[in-house]
Image (cartoon, rainbow over all chains, first blue to last red; front, side, top):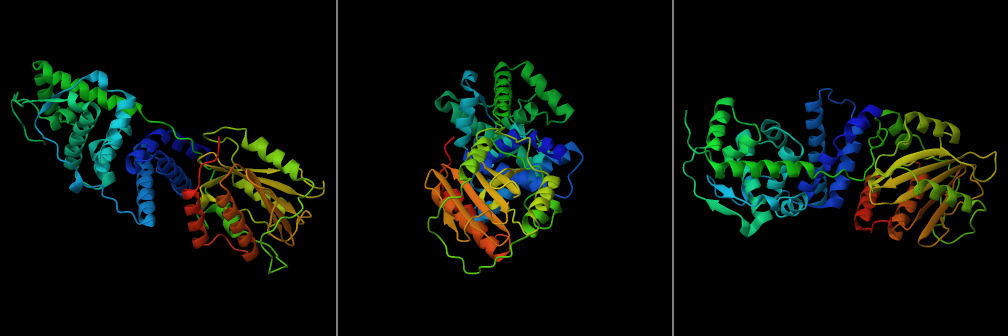
Length: 175
Length: 267
């Protein structure tokens, strides 16, 4: 049990970041992480392999979130249907000095839940595109495109008028 | 080699290390000859690193073992299955103020010593299955050790304590919330001179409730907790001891909702 507690504790920060991305609320996120920890400790078996264990933990948290939403009668949309579509095929000039943990944190609050979620899973939790795709139930290509749009929106949210598009010289379709 | 300028999506995938080697080499070559593109990639890398560093470890506690599911292991068996009391009086009057037991101050002192000390993130002395079983053994199988996870309170302490007479077993159960709340439940063998009736002993902010059965006395207390929330917890526990059953779904839902509506405890 002590070993399991230590394993969970190692992921608390990343679970919390993911929970914030799902709920958009720090208090609710903390409750969600608490719920996740309780559920994980209640499990009869734990994955031994660390990547599988990490995915298992995040899946527990995600399921706990949806359970809570269902109980509350809230409708959760974590697909692309409601996402704002960013212009693709362009690179962007951006003032790097604007990027800080504070501006990122504020910027994330302005994103849609699907965008927050994919950034949290890839950038904060460190999942690959494939792992993220398996976790949220979409193809890897969707993760790739959603993430690029999410980061674009995040940069816009951070910098707003400081972001200027540059014309693309050539485009290559996303693989 | 195709040296066409990578698009935004490809650039993101490159920064994430998600491109196949040939494609990654192609993007790297583009970056070498395109300063603006290189700056954009650096921006993405900085953004990614900053998001990664923004993780904050929440102030929560991980239970030493499961207290969540009925029938899963010794803890659940103890907390949810082992019960409850031989309640002689089936119609116990509710409410009303009563005379506090003479050892109430000692109970408050024990509560405050626990609540104001110890780690805030992960308690190191949380009970394990052995401690729970030992507590049940000392108190008797009819003692009720409640599971309050539905109220977002995690059992984090089970310790024998000295209250009342020396020949009386007393156990201090401490429950920690996620927003600073600390609730103590003292269980004493033999009723400990507590009246059978559900009794409120103090007023906000230092509130306590007591009741007893034929076999055990119960004293619940918290300092600075939302009064409606603590009142509901106390009445729910009292009801559970009367019915000799774990908290039902309706009560657990009410406890959860009460917690969501309540204000956090002062730190």
